[in-house]
Amino acid sequence: MSGGERAVAAARRWIGTPYLHQASVRGAGCDCLGLLRGVWREVIGAEPEAAPAYSRDWSEPQGEERLWQAARRHLRAKSRTAEAPGDVLLFRMREGAVAKHLGLQARTGAAASFIHSYSGHGVIESPLSGPWARRIAARFAFPEETT
Image 1 (cartoon, helix red, strand yellow):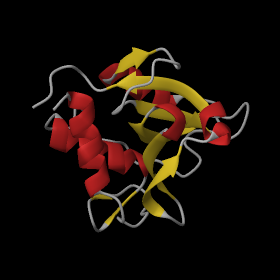
Image 2 (cartoon, one colour):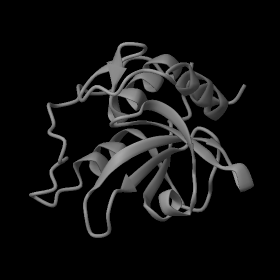
Image 3 (cartoon, helix red, strand yellow):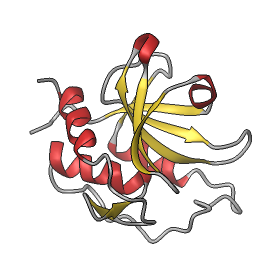
């Protein structure tokens, strides 16, 4: 099984976990970053840095791309069009806003989908429909060194 396939399998085990801001405990609660942190722990190992406390606005008032900067430190940047299962997707929830939502690509092609933790829904697998695809600001892959 490839690293991307392991990441998708790990993320699918989180489906049904309730949404809980700043949490990262499968079955108990997580937000979108907490889901990716949990998948990282399962597929790679210890988290590379402690997540700082963050508000729901993800540094919007300052206009800082903190989530994008952290992704660049720990993940491999990819072309937005080079999709593969297991890719980490970074979304802008509205045009001109900072990128502040994360998901993990599960399927590609005509039935493309992604797994994410979404307020009011918890961890779900959603179609990567046109409205979601247009919001992708960046695409990353987990590091090559997976366990």
